[in-house]
Length: 507
Ligand SMILES: [Ca+2]
Image (cartoon, rainbow, N blue to C red):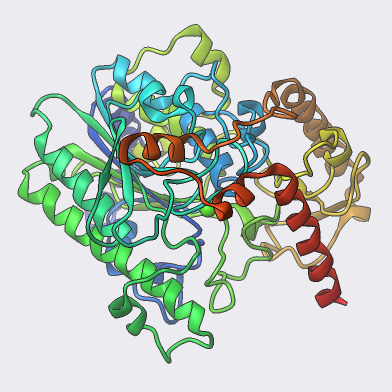
């Protein structure tokens, strides 16, 4: 009997797990989604960081499903658009993080809209970064409650639509709350978490919610609470890393408060908490990059691999899931959990797959697939086709094909990720069939994405829309410095001057 019981259990387990999948579909949990800005895969102690301590992120890691080969875009706005639409970012019109190319195509259906249609209340707290003009803001894209800063980060100013309220810093920022600015008190991350927690507490029981909590930290400028910086001063080689780690420690403290709050509200077991970071590592990669090549702004695995933790006590069992997954899977997964009925348009739009079978059973069948990464960011006024093979990659579970220095034509390198996840050895010459198959899929992706790049060559407004709103409410107008930063010609000059000096330094 002693011998038989484990065998019997092993035989029954797959049955039990597959029975759990339909139980998760339509289960309608509250969803708390935390996305941080520029924290890399390696900036988590559970992933092996030797210095940074993240006890609350580690708790999410320990208590939920961890997707261990989960990929996002190499930069900010592209990732957010893919999470919200279930399709690769270029198909959302997003080929940059600024200069109108960060704006989510108006005809896209968002996850927030799908959840609203399923009876969810939806709130966003923190960074939006998918268009600052009125028609692009989250209240028009499916969010009931909106508490955001402008642009890609607090205090940013670029030509066109992408710019935050004037004079903002990470301390006491002016925040757009349902169409009106409020002058907040405190550090930005603390402010966003506090507002999100208050809103969650106000929600009616029985009506599920989505809280989209997106911190602008630890993205630069490295404006940090002195007490958080002090936690790492002297423990890291560079002063800036202490600031960067301090900002993450502060996020982690806030996550701890949020998890405690869910318990106090009595909704811990009705709430799925998901954590994903938005691109490859930045300020922490010199300390720890989990053995990967590349970082934010590159198509290597180090540019796209992200944490992906899914914790729902009592409903999702802790497990590592090695299946190749990514940002495009987020929408169909949450829509299935919410029991949302998707429109035909949304079904056509979504190219990701629901992860629900894997949440129920980490060993569920998962046919191989390809995922594309491309850094974009080509200069204004040039044709995207000249950049098709500049900083792009495509992979399946085993292989990654990368073109760093190509243009209209590729300069492929091939890596066998099963043997070489650090992408150290180019095996292009040894596997022509693999190269041909992946290259064909890449061409296919480009030909689908190219007509959907709707933001190329678009002229933005002269004044950042959020600054205009702020001045309408409080009075005032642009300073000479603001005008200079919003001038496209001056911006282009500063970019090319920056490149020249960077080239000089490189030489
Ligand atoms: Ca980012």
